[in-house]
Amino acid sequence: MQKYSLLDLSPIPEGETAADALAHSVSLAKAAETWGYHRYWLAEHHNMPGIASAATSVVIGHIANATKTMRIGAGGVMLPNHAPLIVAEQYGTLATLFPDRIDLGLGRAPGTDMATARALRRHMAANDNFPEDVQELLGYFEIPNAKTAVRAIPGEGTKVPVWILGSSLYGAQLAAMLGLPYAFASHFAPAMLEEAITIYRRTFRPSAYLDKPYVMIGAGVCAADTLKEATYLRSSQLLAFARLRTGQPGKLPAPVEDVTSLISLQVAEGVNHALSCSATGGPAEIEDGIRNIVDAYQPDELIVTGMVHDHNARLRSFEIAAEVLRKFV
Image (tube, rainbow, N blue to C red; front, side, top):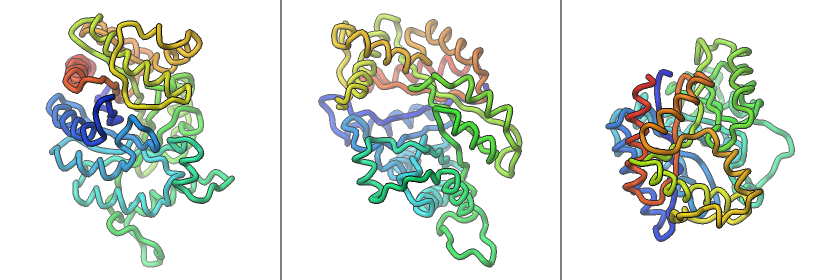
């Protein structure tokens, strides 16, 4: 493994506001930079009461301005929600303001429910234009020739690194075909992880962007000084994910002593499977969990994430994770 990074969903805890969540993200990013995290990514989600990063490019600019060296990016932008030119202008502007620090991960899913997707796009096309949209976007970041009719200004010539994100085989195949780095969302959808990265590595075509495959995988982390404390803290994320899967999204719940009493067995099984690519516990348990993931999949980079209700406990969780992750690079 070459690097370790952090994915922040900018969670809004119960009893707090979006302003609190964004302030917490700045605090976490500053700390993460000192702990050696290579990237700090934020994700686009809409109509989610518990997530404050909907205007992803705006939050990225805010975080980049508060940090100095760490790469800041989108993990990711849901491209079907946007015109490629607008994305190129937004991330080209960020790359102009913060040279060689901005990443752009692209996803194919809407990142929300269908009603919100309609509100975002206004017109729902039946055909899938994702591959064409990715290539159009890549073109805007290149230096234009004399016949270029539409240009991204700022954007052209910035060559913002573009990643393909995915949780299925589709993204793996597209990333391989285009010769782009690939990030798999195993932190919440691990089912096809092994098959997807195998296909990506086997079918990868070297390109002007990348000469060999580069895989980053997501993993959940909930660390504390003891296993008991970490298990207690993780109950917030389990409960939040269970509520999301049953159509009851909300703010990040406070932790509970017995989360099994609040989630049905059937829902709990689904949640535990979805969040199974993870490590929970004290430093020893975190090291064992991360070693199992790294040994099994041999990622070039691991990006960790985790939602903890108390901000100070969240900081401590990612600090412990960094102490462990340094042993694997």
